[in-house]
Amino acid sequence: MKNLTKESILAIIEKKDTVLLATQKKVCLPIINRIYQKMKYGIKFDDIKVCGALVIDGHHRYICSLLVNIDIDRAKSSKTSATVAFNWQDVEFVEEEWDTEDKIKQLNELDADFNNMSIEEITEIIK
Image 1 (cartoon, rainbow, N blue to C red):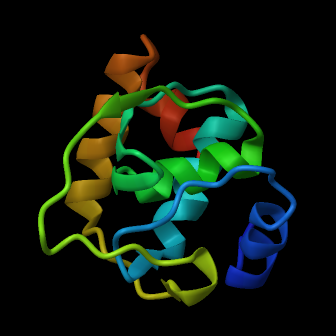
Image 2: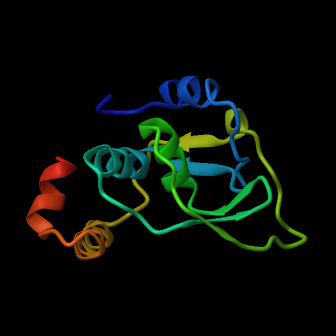
């Protein structure tokens, strides 16, 4: 699965026994594809933030952890009165790139540092 789609992602999510709910209405497919490639390679990421059965922060990382079938660490967080839960089928998977080239470079540098790798190794993974 090089380029994931909403359909391919939902097909995998639906096979899982327990899935946390989303608290944001949209996610970005290009971001999911980059993180998926990294996780598939074994790159580690920061914890996601959860409140009960809700993903508060880390939606893209959480989706990718389900796709790669790895456990991602969870940190307890809180929700606000404005927090709304969404089933993944109701979340919009946007094909528009949300990150700039500079942001992608910055995230790749952080991932390289966090995983004790070179930026060139990270860049090669997401080609």
